Length: 199
Picture 1 (cartoon, helix red, strand yellow):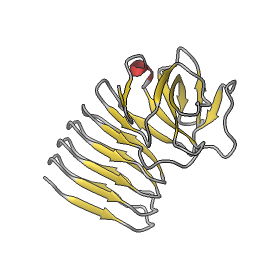
Picture 2 (cartoon, one colour):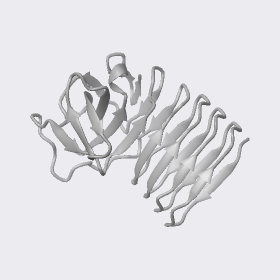
Picture 3 (cartoon, helix red, strand yellow):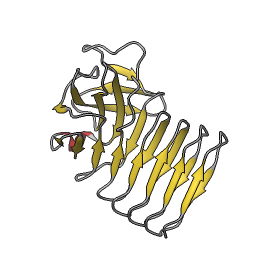
């Protein structure tokens, strides 16, 4: 319990921790790290500039702080938090358009396992708009339903899809998109207070 692991290099590290509570992993480097955290409550992961894969156990209150890298994060316990407050670089060099029905996801963060009560922390206060397009809107956080294809590396907009894409205004006109696998079921219940979206 309470173990701390710090990764600062550019290699591809694999870390597996047990079920103790309060474990911390700081993957601050540029490596393509794979992190497995057990079922203990209150585990936390801080990501860096790498392309990381993170699996969290069934413990409650786990937190992942995203950074400049690209991560694929799977939550398994309740009361989880995805902290995107420092992710402010636009996801697309050429902005998507309101009529666009599909976007590439190879360079987007992907979050799996979000359920009711989980939270997303944004860089600045926004308003949630449910069932909107993939382009996002200035000054808002937009949730759009659709289907994520991890093999094809794309997200297709559609009312019947079980996944969701969150696109938020990170300030200065930069729009950041994040894939929420299975997130469409919670879209209708999402609320925002300040800079926190609660599912």
